[in-house]
Length: 309
Image (tube, rainbow, N blue to C red; front, top):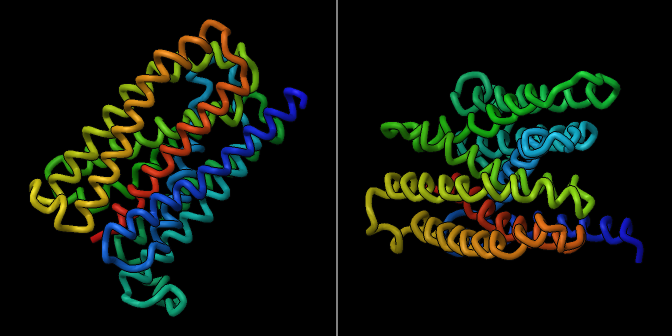
């Protein structure tokens, strides 16, 4: 098989991210007695797309040889906008107190215009649509286009819902939630972006060490802010085992611990070998796919955690 065919095959393995994220949602559902995980399933897809767009927009900051993949950015941002609309529909149905299939257009309109969650959702839709539109224009020939604007709008869209969520009622809660969401998005999204864009041994040698240098601090921030947010929300250690929210938080923390150990091992093996040009591109890509697949499970748990009372 040619190296090009191998690259296509291994990149296709990134599709494992979706079932892995849904696995995290299903696991969270088993740990609680809440409703069916439909909202969590839509939320994890939206969160994953948002993180990927954020990562793709940040690629030129990882290494100057990584050109902005405008066509991919436009397509994924458009999909992100659509899934964020679906999240809004689920949120509106929950606020109104009816199943999604029974949500009337008037009720949805009232949610969008009179409820803060709906207004935040409109802002997210505007931000994601702006990313999709700008990326489309850039792909069609704006040679001087910069990903900086995309990065700003994507970061705003990623952080908006967390800063207005449950933690906003606590002192510094919004700040912690925003930092947590952005760190998680950058950590996950950058590696997905590398897996989508990087194709040669030399590119992995140049970019992987730079990603690794920021990934460890990012996962530390994700773990620290996630634990603090969760314990504040629970009010102590007691409810960790006695509530569905607490059990999901424990499961998420366990997956993060696994990822921390995996990251430590990768720094000693994969990163060193790739930096020394001693690992081919296909092998690096397979390791990236493995890690983002495990990350996606954590994203699924986090998505369900965000919609768990």
